[in-house]
Structures are given as C-alpha cells and as structure tokens.
Amino acid sequence: MTKPRAVSDLPVLDFSRADYQASPFPVLSGWARKWKIARSERGVELLDYDLCRKAIIERNFGTGHPKLIEILGLPEGRPLEYKRKSISFFNRGRRRTELRRPITKLLSEETAEAFRPNIRNVVTEIVNAIPANRPVDLVSTLCDRIPSAVYCHWVGAPASDADFVARTSHAVQQVHTRDPKHAPAVIAAFEALIDFVDERIADRRNHPGDDLLSDLIRAEKAGQLDADDLRNWVIKLAEANTDNSSHQIAIAIIELTRRPDIWARLGANTDLAARAVQEVMRYHPRTISTSREVLSKTEVAGVVLPVGTPVFANIGATHWNADHYHAPEVFDIDRKDEPLHLNFGGGAFSCIGRFVVTVEVEETVALLAARFPHLRLETARFSHSPMFTSVAELVAWLEPDAKQGCTASRD
Image (cartoon, rainbow, N blue to C red; front, top):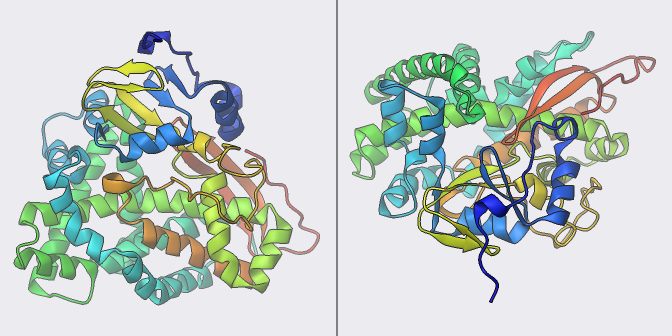
C-alpha cells in the first residue's frame, strides 16, 4: 500500500511567473497535465476537474473566508462584525441553509428570467447614454454601471447612487488580494456601505415597494430571517455584486469582439448570446480559483490534508481540461454535451446571484452585438491574480469609422 504523501512533498506553483500573469489559463492547463494537486504560498492547489468539484461540493471542505480576513488583518469594528455574521463565515449546515433559503427563492433562475425585461431596460438606457463618436472607457460607462444600477433597483435607491455602489464594491473586494496594505481601504468602504444599507433599510421599512429589499423585509416579518440577517444580505449583495459582474461583462465584450465572425453571428441572432456567454465563462472566467478550508483530516489524491489547511480549487485549470472539454483552448460557442463551467461554485457555496449576473452579461452582449456590429476595441488589458481575472482597461469605439481598425493589446 502506497504511503500517503504530505503537503510538503507536493510540487510548488509560482503564480508570480510572467507567463501566468500574461495568460494564466494555458499555464494552469500545463500544470494540470503534470499534477492533479500541488502547493503554493497560499496553500494546497487543486488542478483536476473532479478534485476541484469535490472541494466545492463535499462537506469536509468549508469556507476559506475567515482565514482570508485574518490574513488581511481587519481590526475589531463594524466591518469585521458584519463579516463574522454574514454567510461568508458559515460552513455547511443548518445555519448556512437558513441564511440561504429566503434569498435563494428571491434570486432564483425563474426570478432572474422574470426580471430580464427590467435588466434589458437598464442596459438599453445605459448604452443610449454612451457617446458613439469617440473612444469610450467602457468599464466606467457601461460595465460598472449595469450591475450597480440593478442593485439600486433592488434596494429602491436612486440611480445616482450607482457610482457609489460600484466604487465600494470594487474597494471591498480587495479582501481577496490577501494583502494587509489594502485593509484601510476595505474598512473605509465597508463603513460607508454599512451606513448606506442602514439608510436604505430604514427607507423601505417606512415606504415598502416592489423591489428585492422590500421582499426581504417581508421575509423578515414572516420570521424567515432576523434584522441582522436582512442587513447582512443587503450588504453582501452590494459587496459581491458590482465588482464581479462588471469584470465578467468586460471579459465577455473583449473575448467576443476579438472574434469578428462570432460577433457578427451574435448581431444577426441575439438568441445565441446565452451560448456565447457560457463559453466566455468557461474559456475566460472571472473567478480563476475559489478558496476552501479543510474541516476534518482528509486525503486527496494520496495527500493527507490536516484540519485547517487552505485549499484552492483552480477553476481556470478545470475549464481547460481536455478530458472534459474538446479542444479546450479553442473558443467555441457551439459546444454541446460538455460540463457546465464552475465559475459560480456549487452546492451550499454556489453564488446566490449567479442567475442575475448571467442575465446581465447576456443582455449586454446581445444589445451591443445587435446595435454595434463593427464595435472595435482601442485598448483592452487584463490583470490576473491567483483568484481572479480583472479587466484593467477597456476602451472602445462603439461606431468607429471603417479605417479605425483595432489596436487592442492582447492579454
């Protein structure tokens, strides 16, 4: 019988490598062809599709968020208190199920589809306001504005608050850098967000409406969650909403417009948008990896993982696994009978807003492709961390002259 290996016996991955920073998915795919499991400075790295899914789904892997906050060094105060009480700090079990139940119903796939016309209206209004006679920063004018405007609708806030929502969402997501130097910015953003949410809740208690926050208040009155849970969910939705959605919208625009034949197909048949977005999320997901922590001593691929071991499921590696996807390095919107992407996690840790986010990306892609068949990128630049793809810059002409051409930089 083969003796189980220790974590210290594993090969070491270096995410600071220039080739990873430039183009992480081929690098992850190369690592995965050599190893199913490895280690890095941050913990144990899973590179195999089945092992990643195991870590995402199975009960002996819990949330890695508390350790992440500890590494960041958040001091005692309202932001840390919120984090401790929010769903991010709860592992599988009764409490997490209780917290998820009311919001899962309110943000179900059916609800997201029912909300699609409203999202389409939001996208159309925002696109209509973008100038078409000059290069435009699409991150600030489009990608940030769509999810933050949707959030404002959810909480009954004026559209003028969308910029604030976008700024604070980007700031608080810096927790995932695992770098203590970002703690002051994270704390300041959470303090502002908590005040904003308290004001919105007070307003909706006095003036209920037809929006998500009013529905949550009604769920609270029905005993499905308490006042703290309600408040924490409204903060959580703002925390995760704009930043992740904005980057995924921007990634989709870049990947699809870089392929003029596909962009033309989308413009001619917007029903293809759903397939195109699914392929974007496989080929170039916003989430490159997701964090977990070992809850009880377990063995993975012949390696013993002690309690408390930080584990990272490298989703970017699984999406480029030739055992599960035919020619994974090829961008193909006509894929059939292949696994769904793991961009939104799964099981008790699946992203609550995944259906709404998907609709936001689909509606943005469909409208842009139909209205601007010759949309051209002037500058498009990614930055990659072990956790995320971020769009560092996205400047485009929505209606360029034929002579304009494309000078977009590659990732």
